[in-house]
Image (cartoon, rainbow, N blue to C red; front, side, top):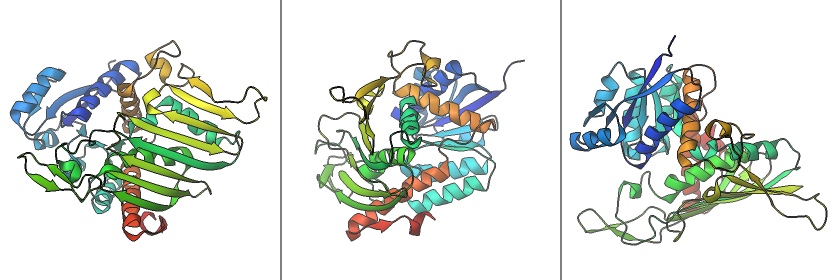
Length: 376
């Protein structure tokens, strides 16, 4: 017998929307999933844009009104890749309609909205997923295993950065990313490195943040100058519940950096280093190596790092950004089928949003703040 279809409805067809399309398509072919995945319909801000996207992406149905996807009883999952300020309205509408929700990060523009979304999901029967596909890399799972199995001893420190340069020019246009409520480099990029830090090291307990605006005005769509109050660079010191300490940086004016999602982890008997710009390599240092042989060794992606082998049988041939999204899709679909836990649900998205908010608050108050007051 054929597999039951799981129908997706995609809202937004920009960069991340297309990534969702490719991720669904690849997951359908690479993995033995409990459903046959089908992207049934997409929506964008106008009928014209939706029509062009549907033709380009090979989707049979389209609309200029996202609510049509919510009302369509044949659609099981709503994928939200719209600007952050629309996430709450769309997600709550989907949950009320009994549809599973796959929402790109950040979950929403405020902790209050994210909590409302998380609470709604918990009081329903739907599954939820927030798009943090960097942590779907098999080598990050390998890093987590190395760190947490204790072979390298006590976890001492974490240093992470997510830096890109798409806002490096002062001529870069003012957009929804500069919304004072939920925008800025910390929300846009810092959420990724926060998620990675907790994935590898464990829960963060205290933060000390410093948010900096370097470009104070940007031209809007009409060419007029708008004042900017969101951060271009944020740095934060961290303390973790397990006693480790560390730091993160979120930076969207890092000239020359296109995708620097890097981390270093220091443990008492060794260290790990990873760069997203070389996402198929994990550098591994062991202090008990013989003298004259000490140094970072490279672990290269291979079929031994599941599910790499689903994509390629040969080691070192490399996964890509879209493949990480396909792995994320797989985990979410298995959760929908009841054969696995939600990989990164709305509650987890709320935690990241809460940490973003706490770092901003810490920057304004110039003091260490504990997570206990807002996360528990």
